[in-house]
Length: 371
Image 1 (cartoon, rainbow, N blue to C red):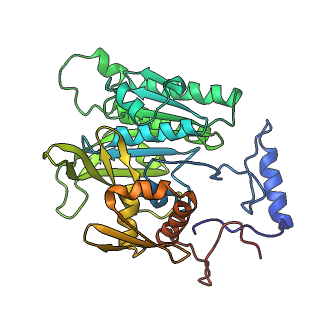
Image 2 (image 1 turned 45 degrees about the vertical axis):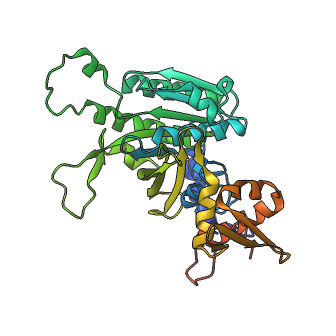
Image 3 (image 1 turned 180 degrees about the vertical axis):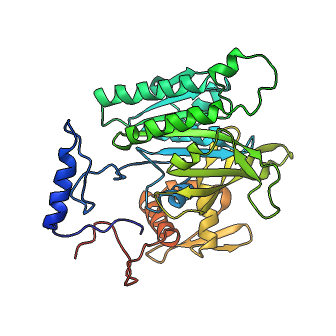
């Protein structure tokens, strides 16, 4: 399990303590800038909370720990081509934030929100703030305002802010100009670069999750085996993001009438400062209800040999040796019928999916481990 080892005693080197105290004395207010990473100080890099994406396998791929997801207090970028599920995934994160008693804020630059679908996937409209913004300058003014308000009020309440999307946001100079060619049009990249430098540290100690969605664009003159896609807005967003996801539709889901009712999506963790990068997760999205999480559970259980399949039937043997048979359409009911069994299956999946960090002596590092 990928977690930090906690040192048993807080004994610290005397010179190190002198240096830390000296650096902290440079700050005129009460803010602390120098810390010890021994588990006894609350530091800006601490990850104390996570919000689920609604897709368990993606949560594990990102956080590399049970009951993880997206890191609170960090910046996340969700990229992909059109109809790859970027906005839907962000909406599921807001829904799970609300289930934790938190608040969701959608800053919409595309004017494309569908409130009926939001209700279908479980969003509580009484805990959702919708904002329409046209320019990237307005977007960051709003984000800064939210951070400052949260600082002064309920610091313990989780707030998820979704900017949907960066690519659709214009700039004030672009709004004022005519529909003519304006050269390189680098205004957005310059503004993003400045804004990201300002808000990254503002978020670090707050229980605020900031998500940007961004469309992929084909990279001109890319080498045959290189990445064929890039994102708009320059390099600053990808640099400051702690997690970057790339979504890709891999297949269509059809019913018995051959109507398309959903899609299967692959998510690649292209950047991760909270766990191992370049891990993948596949999950199904249905147009009438959003992410079907349990179908991904069943797929992983088959891959990891946690379940046996014979034709259309699956066989699971529990801890007591009891054999259970079911079909894929009954898997969700099978899990929900016994919470203890569901919890045990989840633990087995975690055991097979989570990568354990190892120290230089090749011993696993576990959470709250003591010498």
